[in-house]
Image (cartoon, helix red, strand yellow):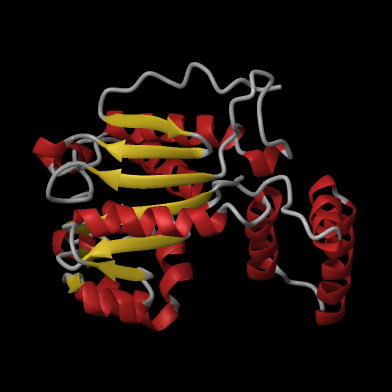
Length: 285
């Protein structure tokens, strides 16, 4: 069994564990949580560590010491703003890098965004202030985003003469083709109402206190869902996104997928608990 002890040591990002909930907090307030190489690397390490301890991936609720495995992950930022995007010094230095060095930097960024987008836990964003460039990319990778009324989101790369290419696949999946294209060309900030309308976020609340209350309410609902079901919902969606075979083959694949779930430990527990009129073993007491 994998232990819940000894998470990676970090300076610019803070990890706290509350039962089956992991909190990842961007902690570079003086720079509006701008993403530099160190912060990106620390985020990647924490996403890997938490993913390896996902209850859904391990098909287990606790480690050998009785500590809960993770079922949700909440991403937030310190101070007035969630994330101002890439650190300007990192962007400036990129101009002097070789193509190989710039590709390595981009690969590190993609590891971050893909690690968040494919994370086996249910991921929630609790955001305030601005989410620009890479910050908007983080937002796009989350399963559910709750923002305060003062949020401003932008695919701002065009203002610097570049494009949101690395974050592009994740923003595109969240917004769809026409909206992604418009916001990438426009590169200006959208406020809470438009972010909600376009599907960039799911919920708007009034202030930090309401933000945490809404996150907690959402996670209480998530805990009533089987952790493997949460994790495998992402696999199901990924296969739908990438399916290139016939419609008949897709229908056959879903039959196999359903059969596997029904025969799994979690599937059997869920069906048995329903018939026996008792809570499933993954539901909070």
